[in-house]
Length: 157
Image (cartoon, rainbow, N blue to C red):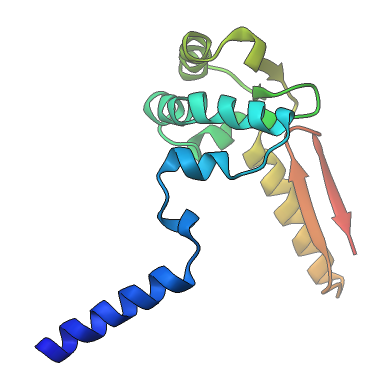
């Protein structure tokens, strides 16, 4: 038993010598070592402050983030500042409740609602149909991406 304890102590001592001290640092110290630009720091702070509550709200209101795919998608837009965007192809009582709850969690300058033509699930279904057509035509090297944000499917061969 002493041999095992000495081995574990040796491994832990070796790990503390090999691994940088930031691995064992408190979260505040780790965050300070990220070397983020001012813009990146703002994005990080916003995400840190609201993201967990946003995901929790989606889960409790819609059922899960995956269930939201039937309606659209929530994404973070960094092109026009930094905003949580709820893009919906269809709405019902659940999505209306979600919108109201998000308004109470996220300040309006960081939240946007967008109406889109297709939900994430619809785009994924189109992607799968295109993939079947390509495979049926003998195309084997392709990549298909869908984007609720851009509302298009792109196929690259």
